Image (cartoon, rainbow, N blue to C red):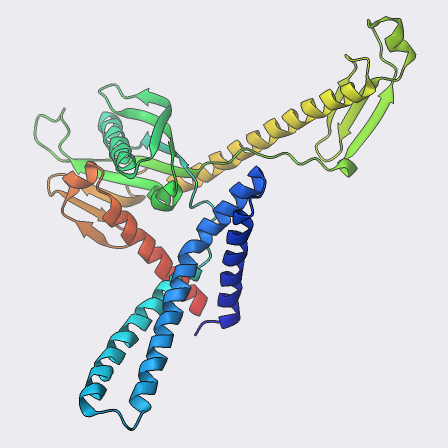
Length: 356
């Protein structure tokens, strides 16, 4: 069922990383190796369980093949074999899941954006309720929540609220929340007791880590020249000024403040690195904005992924046809049942693709 050489490779890599960590690598390598080791821990445990179960089945089979085995022992071993075969089925399934390609963003924190959709003041009130539900869920998980910006509604709630949620595995849990959330309830402002339908949009974006700007020397054009302007007699006698052009981006930096060419070059490279870093951040922000637009749609009630029906105490996720009659607890942050069901559905689809 599994390519044993692939499983052997994973086990060897896990052992190699553990050995390198024990040897005390430098700080940067330690962080990278620790992350890789943590990412392999689960699949290694599943491999060992799978192989141990296979070995147990082989051992039981050998016992049953012994013609000298007495009837009582044979009956006992038969029972143990059935238990082991059931365990193997579970171990195979769990190993399949562990070997599925990982989303590289799963371990990241997120930028959570909740906005009022159609429905006016009631939509803003619901956006506030929804955001607070996520806050409560984050508190249970031990994640930190920092509000980055917020625009309050006229009667409370939020027209828009953006927050950073930091912690391990945040994106893995919240990534299926992006889309339109529809609410059906009697607004506090409704005097006739009529049920209104409104909506809020949610976008969940993985946090982009700081960009490490790697500058290749071949991408640089470096010119030296005599400094101009004020600077004194010494400055004008030497070619201490530096102009660096980063060819791929077209960014040009000139530095002539220092008498030393070496120091001017160092400062110019520092400025160039900062400008490239800023340009990359802006690019990531633009990509995030495009991603957000794709995620939330127009905010219309008909584009819903989930419906919160308060009169019936019901929450329904339309993507997986899951309905729970415990809306009050969901709004208090008890969301794991929904998130786990969405994750299981996603894994089932990935398994089906890998086996097709």
